[in-house]
Image 1 (cartoon, rainbow, N blue to C red):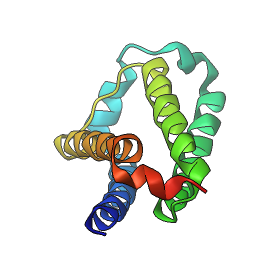
Image 2 (cartoon, rainbow, N blue to C red):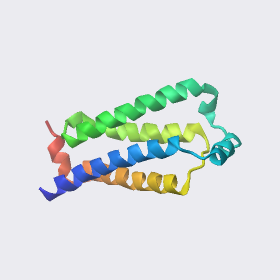
Image 3 (tube, helix red, strand yellow):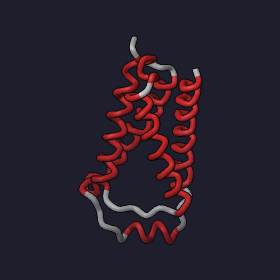
Image 4 (cartoon, helix red, strand yellow):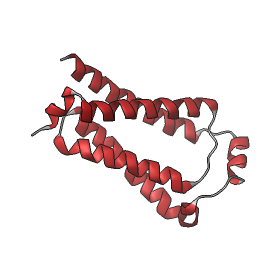
Length: 132
C-alpha cells in the first residue's frame, strides 16, 4: 500500500532529523553557548542531573518507539504519543534555549514530521495495521 510506504518514510525522516539535531547541538559556537548561560532558566535547571538522565531515557525510548512503529507493533502507537507529550513537557520545564538557524529549521521540520506521524497513526487506515 502507498500509505504504508509514506508512513515508513516519515519514520525514517524523523530518525534522520533526530540524529541531525543531536549532531548539530553538539557543535555549538562559543558565542551561542555563552548566550545560553544568560537565558531564563526553567524549573528543571535546579535538577540538572535528573534533567539529563530523563533526556537520555526519552531519547533512547524514542529510538525504540520509532522501530516499533516501523514494524507496526501495537503498543508503539501509544508509546509514541506519550513520548511526544513527555518531550514537550520536558522542553517546557527546561526553560529558554537559543538555536542556530539550521537547528531551528530542523526543530520545525521535526515537529511537522511528528505531527504527520501522529495524524497517520490515529486518523488514517494505517491505524488498522496496529491492531494485533
